[in-house]
Image (cartoon, rainbow over all chains, first blue to last red; front, side, top):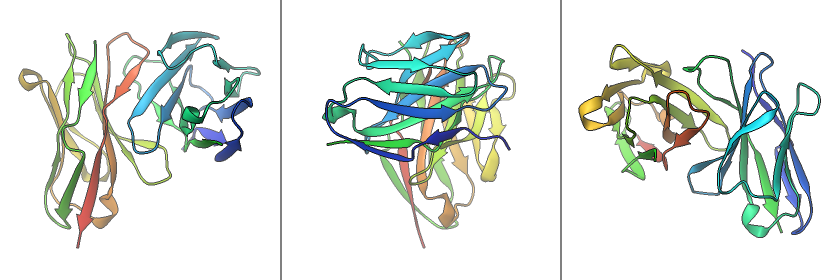
Length: 114
Length: 113
C-alpha cells in the first residue's frame, strides 16, 4: 500500500536556525497537510495545500512558517527561525480527490530545538 | 466553530474486555467523522470513517463506531480488546466541503493482562 514518507525522522537544531522538514505524499493525492503534536498534547492543524497554494492555515502557522511543493513530488515545511516552543512532532498528511477521502499520515519528524 | 471532545484522557481495560472510547463533536451539520490510532513513535493510522448512511461503521482491527446525531457523538467500540490495542486513539472531524480535519485531544488506552 502506498505510504506518506517523511525525512528526517529526527532533527535537532539550535534556536534561531532554519529547518526544512520533507515529505513525499502518496503519488496520486492532491491535498497536502502539515500537523504538529507537542509532546503529550493534541494533534494540531497547521496548514493545508491544494493546487499549488495554501488553502487554509491555523493561527500557529505564522510568518515563520512556509510550505512548498518544489518539484511535484516533495512537500516541505520550512521554519525560518526556530524557537524552543517549535519542538514537536511534525506530521505530513495527504488526501486523494473526493470529499470523503481520509487523511493518510507519515510517521512524523521529531524536531528538537535547543 | 468546529470542535472535538474526547472526555477520557486515559482508559485501562483488561485484555478480553470490551472497550468504548467516547467522542463528541460540535458542528452545525453532519460532518465527516474519523477515528485514528497512534502507536508510540508512529504516525496516525485510520481505523474507520463515517460520511453518511448506516450509522454503525466497521473498521480495521475489529473496531466499530456508531454515529448518533441526537447526541453529537461518534463513540469507538471493540468487543474484546487485545494487548496490541494499547495506543493513543484520536477522534477527528472535517466539515463538508472543508480542507481542515480537526482532532480531539486523544485517549490513551492501557491494556492489562
